[in-house]
Image 1 (spheres, rainbow, N blue to C red):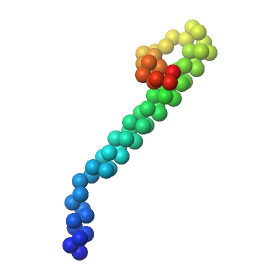
Image 2: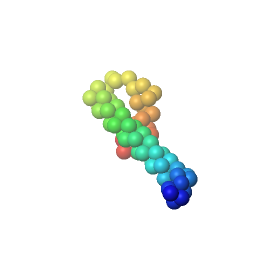
Image 3: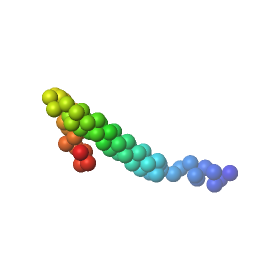
Image 4: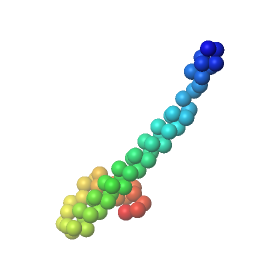
Length: 64
């Protein structure tokens, strides 16, 4: 019974690390797909007016 109480006193370092890694990965995937969609819109229609969000996503994503 004494050893069970010791396991509850650990700090949540691993959980916080995994949360931040998954958050960064999710944001990078969202930026990639948004830039991909924006690049397709621009390539299909040369007169397409790019919004600041679409232009920023294309600028931020190194693959586009």
